[in-house]
Amino acid sequence: MKIAVTYDDGNIFQHFGKSEAFKVYEVEDNKVISSEVVDSEGQGHGALAGLLESRGIDVLICGGIGNGAQEALSEAGIEICAGQEGNADEAVEAYLRGELVNAGVTCDHHEHEEGHDCGGSCGSCPGCRPQIMFEGKNAGKVVRVHYKGTFNDGTQFDSSYDRGEPLEFTCGAGQMIQGFDKAVVDMEVGQVMDIHLMPEEAYGMPDPTAIFTIELANLPGAEELEAGQQVYLTNAMGQPFLVKVTARDESTITFDANHEMAGKELNFKIELVEVL
Image (cartoon, rainbow, N blue to C red; front, side, top):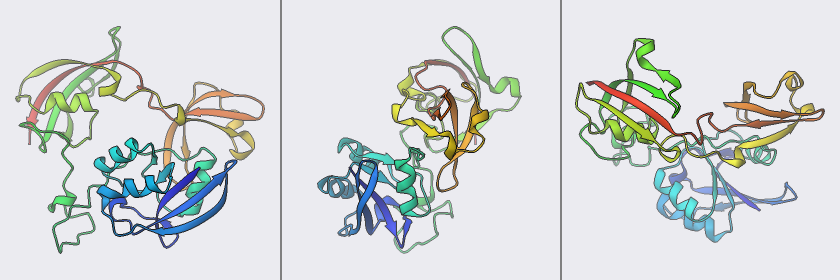
């Protein structure tokens, strides 16, 4: 197996499309046997997937990455572990221990205006605006909605009405699950809509790679956990992520990092309250 990491002076470089180098690790029997730093050959984000595929890369560990690059890497059969930061070597070791989870971070800062270097924080140049995923009258606008979410048996799992405060988000920017976002993009203020979402439009199907087992000796305090409990773990870069305990025996504990709604069909009543 080969693992590539976007690389800069020992650390994970944060923008896939601008990465000038990758550190490539050769792995056998779940151990790193060799590594080398390779030049990206000056290719932009649209061609880097082909470069990695040509080098036989199986896994990419990176910081931010655009949707187009993610699709190209997926088509090439390369697993993506995005949203990572810190030391590259430590990240690879964490991945091999099953402790690294794909955070799905999308990089929106590779389209800055020429000569403009805001560091990704000004909010006005193209690279700092939210990336709009689809078109519609409300796309790119901040909207406020009330909603009620239920399962197919009618059980309510969430409601902004009960909280007494509408939900505010940028429509079409991927801040909401896809089906919810698409429903709001063409709604009129005051309109109420009922929608039914399959898992592919909501939280997706469960990912078997997000289920992992750890030796109890490597996780102090885990011996007190029981199946069904939800806890936060921290990866090698100090980033917290929520997991559910699925099993524990005398020596190991198994966690599931899939979203609790993964694989579920969801229903929403949505009311568009305001477009800001």
